[in-house]
Structures are given as C-alpha cells and as structure tokens.
Image 1: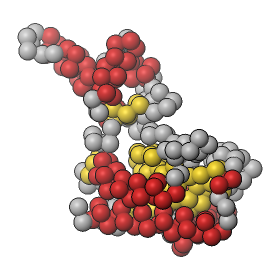
Image 2: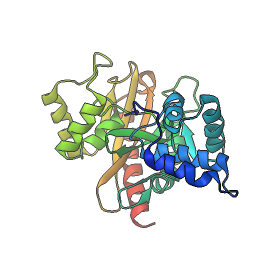
Image 3: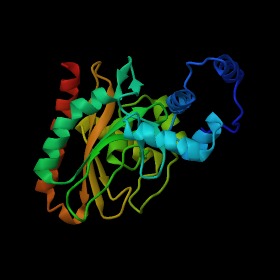
Length: 272
C-alpha cells in the first residue's frame, strides 16, 4: 500500500549526509537508484505521485527519471500510468527472475498468436496479486486487449482462476482481501461456494474459462504454468471476442493449444 508519509527515514537522512561531501557521487544516478528501490519494495505498481512522495522529489523530476528508466528497459509503465520494475529486475521464488518465465513462455505464446490471431497473455502470482507480465496483442481491429502491469481479478479472469485454483487457502484469502470480489458483469461468479467449485474444476481439468465474466462479449481460456519445482507460478491465456468463437469444436481446439503452450513453458523452465 502507498505510504502515508513522504518524509525520509533515518537511514535515508544518514545516507544523504554521507554522500553530500562525496565528489564522485552522482545525484542523478542516486535518485534513479532510489526510485528503483521504491519499486522493488512495493507490493504493487505505483503511480507517479506515489513514487514522488516516497523519494521526496518533484513529480516533474521523477517523471524524467522514470521515462529514462523505462526507455532503458529497467521499468515498465502500464496503460493506466503505473510503474513497476521490468521483468529482468524482478525475482520470485528461489531468486528466479520474472524474465525467466517470460523467456520460456514467449516462443509458445508466439505459436498461439500465429495459429489463432488472437491476444495471448502471460500472468504471474506475486504475493497479494496476479499481474500481467507479457502480452501479444491480436492484429485484428476488434480484439481483446491486455497490458503489462495490469492486476487481474482472481475470481473473474481465466488467468486469475488458473493460478488461484492451485494456491493454498490462506494465499487465496489474501488475494481476495487485496482485490475484492467485484461483480463485473451478470456472469461474474461471486458466490463463495460456486467459486470454490470452479477452482476445483480448474484443478481437475487443467484449464480455466472466463465466459463474459470480466468483460461482456469477451471470452478467455487459460492454463497454469508450473515452475521448476512443480509449483504453479503463472498462467497463459488466449482472449477473443465472443463473436469469433464459432463453435464448441473451436473452443476445444483453443483449450488444447493453450494447455499445450502452458505445459511446454513449464518444461522449458525446468530444462533451461
């Protein structure tokens, strides 16, 4: 959660005093590193105002630094204007980088994209949220879109359900408290008993479905990705407008392809 105070800590004040007389110290680089440290410690992507408050700088100065970090590949900016560390700098589990999953998944995501021409998305579980870490947009004019850094509902998205279904109960509860159980459409599952049954189905069948549950006229099919230790760390999905989902045969074809991509990604991670 964003800090309510922008006052520097004791450690920060000591560090500032220490470098004040250092003729080799670069203030610009130091400030950029402060921003990276703030993003590293945050449980969720942060907006410009939050970052500026935490580092004690003007928003205009922070924006220039963030832009440079983004162009240089150290920071990602979502469509909503929130900032997070790029995949190369982020880690999870036993010190593995987010980019390890992205690199393993991307060839299989591209295969899905070429085969179906629809939007392909990769998401990961980070403590109290499920977040998009990579996406390949459909080239079609009418399409389902996604953005890196987007936080997904654990109960109303195929990626969210594919991951949440494999998490321990206490972690699931933490996700629900963090995100909430919002009704996005008339099809959104908010009943706790029904939702548990849905998670059980996902575990049993190995895939998840978002049937207009997050967006009307939108369909999404996801499958979990298991990391090197066999624990589910992410999921891959294919999203398309309902009008292009021709029949049950096409749905089965998509589900099989998404499951294959997720399985292949897990194998790529395990075998380097």
